[in-house]
Image (cartoon, rainbow, N blue to C red; front, side):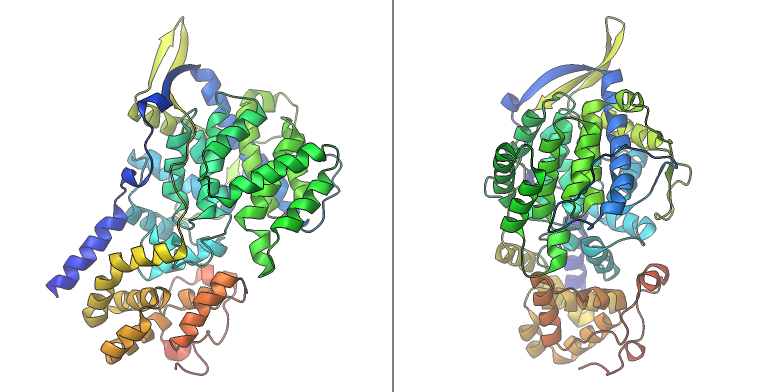
Length: 517
C-alpha cells in the first residue's frame, strides 16, 4: 500500500509540475532589449483580441462550408453588431488567461489545469478537447490527456492552433516565450504536428508587435518549426503556389487540397492541422496585409473556417491595432457574452478580455527582464526581444509510448492491485492504450476484470472511444479496447446529455444492452 501511494505521488508530482527544461531556452545572442511605446503595445493586444472575435464570429457560417472546392464570397465587411460570444475557438484561452491573472502564475500547474477544466470547461467541447476532458474524469492528468498515445485526436487536431493565439499576444516580440507558454496549454489536448502549429502561430503573432511585413512575419513562423515538421513543407508549397497563381486563389486551393487531403477520414481533413494551416497561410498571403481581405480569403479557403478566421483575425488585428480597426467604420459592439464556460465572468467585454492579457504581458515582461518606464514623457515597455526558434521537437508514437510506459507502468500495477474505482479505471485505460493488457490480464486476472468493469462505468470515456468517426488513430485505439473486451454503450449519448449529466460513473449493467465481455 505504501509503495502504491509513493508511485501515485510521483506521477502526480511529475504531471502537476512544469519543467522549462523540456523546451529549448533562448541564449544571450538570441535576445536584444527593445523599447516599444506602451500605448502601441496595448493597442496591438486589444486589436488582436478584437480581430480574433471578428474572425471567429464572422467565420462561423463558413465552417466546413467550403472543402474540396474554393468559396465564392466576393466581398466582406467585418461586423459584430451584437458583440461576440464565447466559443471554443476563443474561450479555452479565456479560461487560462483568467486563471493566470488570478493566480499570478504564467505556467499553471497541470493538476490545477485539470481542476479548472472540471470547473469551467464542460460543454461546447469537441474532438480532442472532449476526449481530453473525459480522460480527466478517470484522473489522467494533463498533459497526458493530450498524448498521442492516449488521445487519438491529439496527433492531428487543430486545437494546437485555435487555443494558441492569446499566448502570442501575451509575449510581444518574445516568440520563444510565446511558444513555450502556448505549448504548456495546447499540449493539454494535442501534441506532435499540432504542437508545431502552436509554435507557428504564437511566433507569428508575437512577431507582429515589432514587424508589419507579412512575409517577414511568415519567415519568423517558419523559423519556429522543427525542420522535420510537415508544416515546413506545407508553407513552402503554399508560398510557391501563391507566387505562381497570384490572381487565382481557387487554383492554389485545388493544389493544396489535392496534395494534402488524406483518404482515411473526412473529419481528419476538415479539422486537421495540415490542411487548415495550408488554408491559413494561403489566405494570409492572398490578403496581402489587408484585414478584411485576409478574412474573406480565409472564408473562401474553407475547412474549419471559424477557427482559421479567428487565428488570422488575431494576427491581422495585432498588425493593425485596435484604433485602426475601429477607424474603419465597421459596426463593432464591445461585448463578450459568456454562453459556454461555467463559473466564469458573465459581464466580460472584448476590451476587458484584452486588458487581462495586457496585465499578464506585464507580468511576463518583468519575469523576462523587461520593464515599464517613462522616456521623454512617454510610457514605454523595455522588452527582451527574442529571435524565433523552435522550442519543441516532433516525436514518434513509439517514442511516446515508451516514455509513458516508463512513467506509469508501476503505478498501473499498484492501482490495479489496491486502487479505488477511479484508479483502477485509469489503470485499465492506460494499459489498453499502451499495449500492456495481455501481461496484466495474465498476472492479475481478477483485478484486471474488476478494473475493466470500473472503466466501463465511466460512460463518457467509453463514448469517445467508440465515437463513430473512422480516422486511423481512433480506429486503432478502438480496436485495442474491443480486443480487451470492451463494447459500445447501448445508446450513444447526444451532446446535451454529455454536457448536462454531471454523473461521471454509472452502473455498467444499465449502460450496455448486451452486457460486458
